[in-house]
Length: 404
Image (cartoon, rainbow, N blue to C red; front, side, top):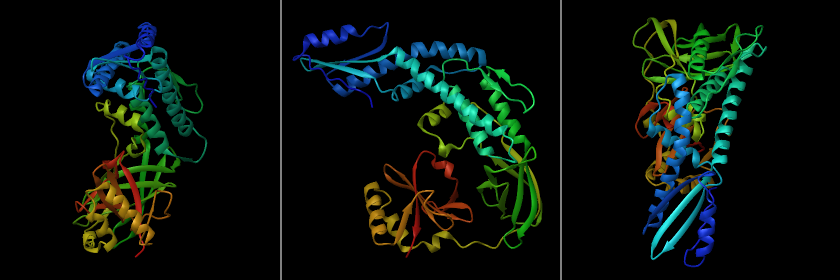
């Protein structure tokens, strides 16, 4: 939590001069703001502070960016540092008031700015260690989701770290690691090569009526234990998941013929990102990593029309939808329905199976989306279309089971 010191000038004038005098530009980044509106003066002081921090970070990042042959704009750097500064615990403030004119001084230790980036560096190394450990483990299975997301998270965090990081990357289990200081080049290549080595093998069609295929998934002779992906099923883009080396894909095409299916491997895992990772991804839009796999299936035919979800909405769900534009009313309605034993509200670990459950996506204004989980796909009852959960990354979500 940011410390805020409020010192009244007309009560303690000498104390203020004493405090301000101790704030040396040699040891602190300092920002000033003034005016009759206290909140605007504070905002101006904070903006001034972040500009002072930017002087240090811009030069450091520019040195690193020159080595990596990348471009990072001034606005991006300022946004990054502003967000990062909010995470510190010792941004201090002095407020002076004379004749209804406020003068705000905000300051932060240069030492603590350096500590912030040192923590970030350790986090990058931690992500790399997790990926390397899982990638070169001796077990017969591999959690590729963990490998890919931690490589990617290390990559985007390195984009907002103001220095070069050297890391010893393992090439195989038999040879010594090779150290690289070019994470911006090494990590995208590593992620792409892993995705290229993933093999989806159609085993058999386990349901002729609904055209459901069972596939085996391997990586360099190791069974893939966990991996997320998406694909076009004939009606829209849908999500899939590999568990214990296997996955199932359902198709809804209009004709019965051999067809090549394009799978997109998820290496970002946006719904698991914290605030800093989302910020880092925001300044990493130029990162392009191919993540598609092509698989040939035969006998993909038109499926019988599925029941429209909107025609079978339970009364309790309709009741919730009535208050969708008011967050407080929505939360109260959830509590009331739970007390009446009409619904069970929980999180991912509450329910063994998600089939036929509802997923509520909440925002400041109320319900953003009301999703029904059916046949491993999400249908939004509000827009009446199928959606991907990554569209709501960072939003508050809760699961609902209807009891009666």
